Amino acid sequence: MVATSRPGAVAGAVGESGSLGPARAGVRVEPGSSLYHGLKRKNARQRRLISAFIRHQKQLARPFEQRLLREFNRLGERASVAYLSGAKGVADDERIAGRITREARAHLFNQRVLKPAFQSHYEKVAEDTLTLVNEAMGFGVELADLPMRQILATGGTRAGLVDVAQGTRNAIFRAITAGRARGDGPAAVARSIRELVPAGRYVNAGAQYRARLIAVTETKYAQNVSAMQTYRASGTVTALLAFDAQGAGETDDECVERDGNTYSFDDADVELASEHPGGTLSFAPVVEGVR
Ligand SMILES: [Zn+2]
View 1: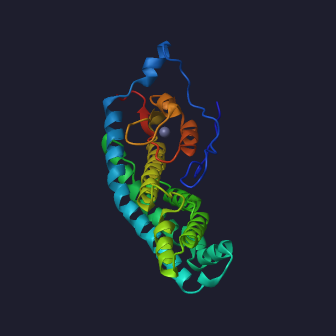
View 2 (view 1 turned 120 degrees about the vertical axis):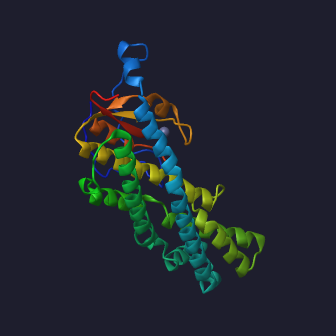
View 3 (view 1 turned 180 degrees about the vertical axis):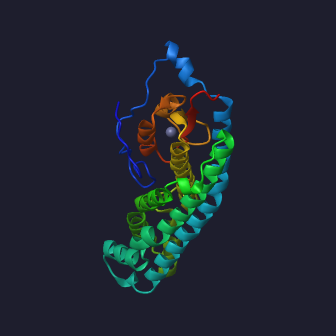
């Protein structure tokens, strides 16, 4: 079994292509074996906690989604203004796109806009998750027991993984070349830039989808890192029970198979680090002798 502790592990964030996570290393029990049904059993307390996570994830993600959408729209506005204020006469579309991207400060967006937004969201989710876990499990873990600095650092690192600069540049390039093909004037191209930039790589799904996917994914991730820290701080949690393929999010065979398996802390961290965007993986605490 792999026993790699990965504090602040960040693979699987929105903006990455493909999973960089290591091979899955959970406890493997074949269906039909005598251990299988014991491990797959979820008690009522654990189910209630995970249901509460899912409810709160939706509530917490909504304002975060709105904030992200606002910021992506502002970026589109800046790019549109930058286009109108100078670059429109230049012949090389690649160079224009690069220049507008810089003038719109897309290369600073992760650090200056997303990082503080992610960190305040991670903090809010950590406080909320702590309360949920304490209530459901009867723990007395306090906020001071949580390594908040590590949780905020994780939020900051995840903010850095969202693709902004390249997605913005591509969107501007598309707007300019499509506009030229249609014979559009500068005002129409500028409008197109303002519409395409907020969506980034989500050309068809759009900016709202992009903001929602990030908000939902990061709320879940923040819940998970916060829950794991709360479980560690409780001193009584001996293992983690995976809940996955919970219906509300995207799923696949690996997620279905992972559901109901029991993990050590280190192995659960590995699973979380390799989770895909929009996933529903959560861990409930296993406390010896408590049903
Ligand atoms: Zn999944």
